[in-house]
Amino acid sequence: MENYDEVVFKEEEIARDDGHGVEAAKWKILIVDDDEDVHEVTKMALNDFSFNSRELEIMSAYSGEEARRLINDNMDTALIFLDVVMETDDSGLRLIKYIRGELNNSLVRIVLRTGQAGHAPEREVIRNYDINDYKEKGELTSQKLFTAVISSLRSYEHLATIEDNKREIAGLYDDLKEYNANLERKVDTFGKFVPRPFLECLNIENFEDIRPEQARPMQLSIIFSDIRNFSNLAEKMSPQECFKFLNRYFTLMSGPVEAHNGFIDKFLGDGIMALFHCSVFDSVDAAIQMQVDLDKNNVELKKLNICPVKVGIGINTGDLILGTVGSDKRIDSTVIGDAVNLASRIESLTKYYNTRILVSEVTYLMLKNDNKYLVREIDYVRVYGKDKPVKIYEIFDGDDTQLKQRKTELLSVYNEGLASYKSQNWQQAIDAMSESLKIMPDDNVAQIYLERCKNFQTNQPGAEWDGAVFLDKM
Image 1 (cartoon, rainbow, N blue to C red):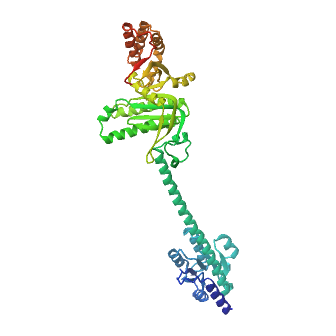
Image 2 (image 1 turned 30 degrees about the vertical axis):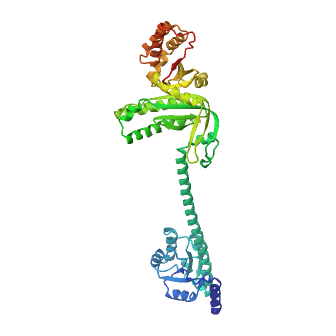
Image 3 (image 1 turned 135 degrees about the vertical axis):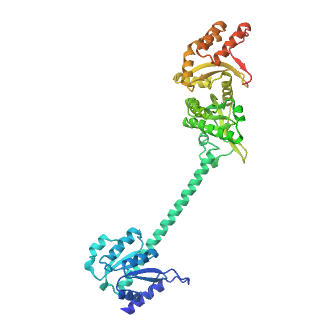
């Protein structure tokens, strides 16, 4: 039997020799038993053992406590032959719980080897303890020892390979996760220069597909906004303070635009150009919310003894071309069309009439049947660059509560004055606008009409007069 064991051991070694001449790391086996003879016999039986071209490194422990120290220092131990009864009747069993529980070592193979089966009945131990085999010392012949070692090492190798693969996969997952995070950051950064809704309007799915001359005709609502007297504000700031102020202001104004399905196409100095492709109501709701948020921010500025910020907003709706322009090295998004220019002119008129939100007649006609907004007609104007006059309207939902109440109160008499003005009944128009100014003395619109009607009383307009006024500076 001994000769047969030796042959088998040698055959296993020769069959698994990799032939590279490099000494592989040894398999670590720990014998835990308080009987010195068990250690000597086991070492003798495994003297020439080799598996997968790796020899054995056999360690010995004579108590549970000594085994704990060894296993702590050798977490790569592949196999433990473990006695149950040593310094106490359950030393081996407590060591199993320590290895599997506290050390969380599920790789090492544990073969329970007992000479006193009554202290650890096989069925009970197998059920309650995480061991891999159970042997009585008397039955563990040289051949069975060989079989136990081979099967245990093969099992340990497979499990260790799985754990290595899991760690490698986890590492690859972390690398992929970081790669995706970096990619998302790049996409987000790129999206700050070219808004994703802009790409959606052009049916462009990926940023890398952007190129010059991609364009599409669309009907959009356009918002232009501008800070009043920004030059005076900027003079009191350092360059760094100016940029910080603008960035905080743009952040504040961007919220309502994005919340109402719009996107900012450009920041123009202290101005904003925003586009809305879903609904004209979105553009008006965004403009109102911009004024409301600005008023809230001005309350905080006042506490810091900082002058409040005032903004004029012009809105127009019309057909235009949305697309990309530039060169092979520099591309920008843009919109081209008369509707864009008119929106800009209307925003400029907010300064002249001292209003906060003005909309074109095209925009107003899309809103009027809804009766959702507080509106008054402002004027019929020929703006610079256009031959055809346009009506403009004020949306005053974004004004503070007191101002909205006064404008609502004067609306009836104001409209009477406006009708008299259109029919060239100058005195009636003067009387109505004077009455309107009693309700709201600082209404610049009524004041403009009052002065205009007084002028027409002495300087009658010609027969070709259509009620339009030419504002060449706007």
